[in-house]
Length: 385
Ligand code: PMP
Image (cartoon, rainbow, N blue to C red; front, side, top):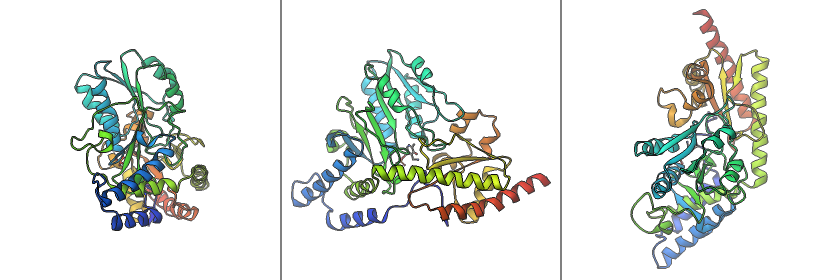
């Protein structure tokens, strides 16, 4: 089997599994307990928190450990909007956010908040002029994805951060797909809140963080104990936190750059093979070194997503027919719709291929060797109809 759905989730790194196993065997204490077992667990948490904070140039006290990016996004949006409702009711986002951003915003709209969904161009990018036009005195929150999970487009986070320096709006970014590939400096980029999930970077599922600038105050989404400086109630997942920190330690700045180059090479390898085989295709998005390059969204003209994905699966190759979060439904991708319109044939004829740290050039060659005959067969069948 060849796994090319790393934007959905990644396999855990062996070092992460080892760290977590050790943790579960030796440090089972509750970090809130004052006895030795509790203190041991707390020490593991403190060390891990420092590693996570350092990775985005933040302070350990600014990190809220959560159950993943869904919880981080829900907290950053719902809790801060409620806390700031007296200052304004306007929120700015994009049309191509993850459902864990869009759904809390939909709920806020029902409560009377006003949300601007910035449109994107055919490469999946917003225009700063649209952002400038949308920002007003009523804006209390801006939430913009750093790198998109379906097409890999990167958003102008630094530019938006700069624009908000003297504005009341707090700036949140969902960095779930970008974190393992781009260097992030929350202070230099003027980011007030940032969501990350461990399972996208060869860490465990069910753990993530929400960075928050000291000025950002909000009550915990979950009501209960006083963990995470009262910002996230519930007994801490020590093994998960330790595994998350181990996964982060494995991704140095050099490693990120190496992966970006490697993934760009994989895209070229696939495009060359399609060109050589005269298969008509287009990229949904564009090829740019500064995108989040592990995501590759391909339109194979005239070939149904469903037929292609099913045939690839039968042949042992895992890709996505959209994002994992919406692929289960028959709804067309809201990201491709925002880029190309609801009538575009791309909506039903595209697949998302996504690479991971463990993906090799041989995997890509095996993928190509599987893909080409399937596409040719489906195209012939189509022509015969
Ligand atoms: N945001 C983005 C951009 C994502 O790709 C995902 C994962 N599909 C999430 C948020 C949700 O992350 P989690 O699975 O940790 O809840």
